[in-house]
Length: 64
Image 1 (cartoon, rainbow, N blue to C red):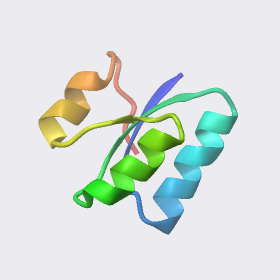
Image 2: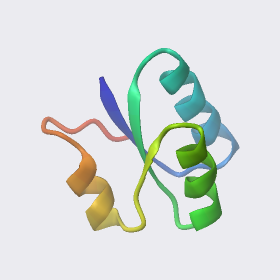
Image 3: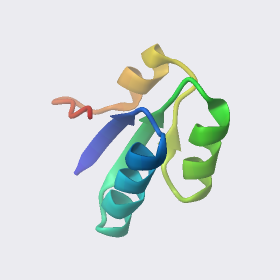
C-alpha cells in the first residue's frame, strides 16, 4: 500500500519508518527539507512541495 505522510517530526517520522519496515511504500513531505532527506535515505519517496507530494501519490490517495 502507498501512503503519504505530511509532518515528519518525531511521531510522523517514526510512523513512516514502521510503515516502510512492514512493506508499505511511503511518500513524505515536510516544510523542513532535512526531515524529508533523512527518510529518503531510509527508502521513502520525498517531495519538495505540496504539489509534488500529491502528484507522487497514486489514486485513490491516502494521506496522514
